[in-house]
Image (tube, rainbow, N blue to C red; front, side, top):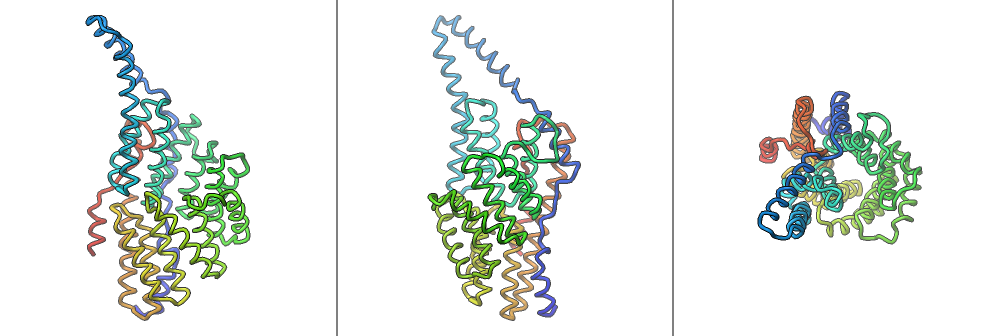
Length: 400
């Protein structure tokens, strides 16, 4: 393969596109299960009822006060979900994502069983679940959990339109955004921004809308959206929202060929992310900085940043394979610029291996989920839709 052919392959941005794995059948099965799941946990009710009767009988037989025993049982029952959620949070904050993922289902179920007393634990588990799915690029599961929550919340197997709850609508549209369905996602963000929202929700919607507008080359609209977002969060310079705003602004500046300003924004975003418990955007930010340096002709810095991005993302046990593939794609372009054709070919081959692994893993996940949904398996919540495929193939990709 000569340089021109190789460069053409590396410059094709559609090579590593995220497919739309959720077909009509899977969307309908998920919506039906979400709508049919009971909103009241009768199992927990009966366990609590018979425990109450049993404690009453024991206390009466032993002639001891009843109230302290009831208080103790209730305290333990409510304390378990918070203890489990604390363990998840501790693992997450220590960047032990695998451990947090393993502990999350149990913490979530216990928190749901003891609702509404454990609303704080449910919220924290949801936030961690969402962050892990984003970091690992699991857009399929993110979309399905959002669809499940949509149907459960509205008590109907709905699969078209826009969810009434803004948080669910944002998560569903974000899954579409990550699948590069930018027009579809932007329509949801715009619709929800017409409604009155809490500050944090509005900021998230604005940032996601601006990202879509940059990708759709609606640069003036993206600039206006980011200006509105800046006015909303200008006093919050060290938050994740501020870091994401700088990242999207950097993407806009790249489109406008303001490369030095873009690199400053990426540096600011990196500084903020370094103080966060999860390195969700560190890899993509380093890759973006590498792209900027390549466009500036600063090849040594570009290579350093791109290799750092690859090392950071590949070090995760369950990495974002599409982001890794695109990072290798950018590294291949850099090697082409330097006439290092063999290294460029190896980078392209590695990109394809990660991407092919991702396609195979998600296809297997779709098959597993359809089987579970068709089998009528009992789902206690949307987290039962989470699936981890075997890791052996991924380890083989790394070794190669």
